[in-house]
Length: 160
Image (cartoon, rainbow, N blue to C red; front, side, top):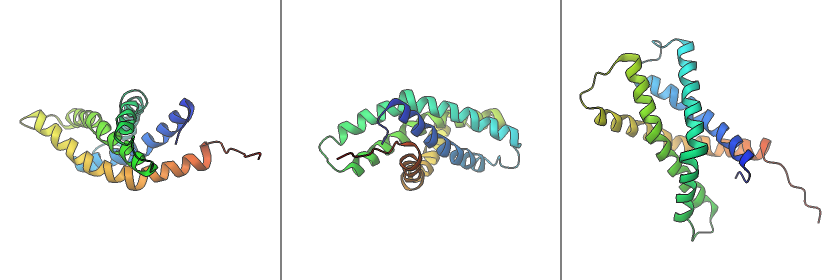
């Protein structure tokens, strides 16, 4: 989809905004924090998560997910396989990192009530992956690609 660095930033910005918005509400719901966190705390948590996700998308997870996905799909000519593979690797990578952020914010809000932090992290990661993968593939991916091609990607005029 994006072919330049500028387009990649726009695409990543829109994708991160949508994914972080939905996943923030989802995690607040899972942790029973809706109604306990005031509006400003929720906005602050969203903003911090968005900045972290955008940095991860542009500089760490995104480039590595694309490289890995392109290796896996090198022998296919069907773009949908490449898109789905990139999306899957992106979700796995982002869920790995953002679940740590989510666990940390949960501990900051309500203290640590668990016995073993690795088990709690794996639980948070699993719940986030179960939500994020279908959200990305079925809703956000197609929606962001539509927005990107309709409003951001420059239209090329054929002169022949």
